[in-house]
Length: 167
Image (cartoon, rainbow, N blue to C red; front, top):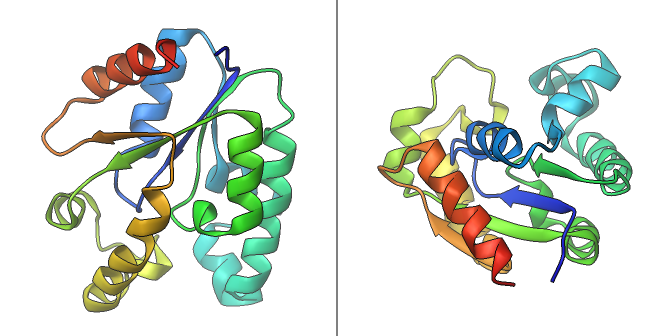
């Protein structure tokens, strides 16, 4: 199988952006962070979009931006933590590339995320844990899964490249 797009899915703090940049660099492909693309187009941080317009409007923006990114000739695309939960988004991803679930334990994620308010769905750690548990079954629908706890981004990127070649 030849693919021109690799989509990284997983919970916030799983390493999608960090691994995505490394993977794109190694593959000589462009890197796109879906949340950063939305922020660029809207001129506001995700947390402000959530506060001003609400999560449903943010999810609409997310669907539109993902559709546009899926039309790029090639790229590594890091999805936001909730993007792959949406059936329509998941269909776009699966039709246009390879999905890779970066599977990180909740304890590893808790150590990575800074409580600086930049992640609106992390405000309450107990609710974040519930969200993590709710989303994992969706993430597990990805074509490939890699455990990321205690792994360096370069090692994860190399493993993704190896696994994608075998598809």
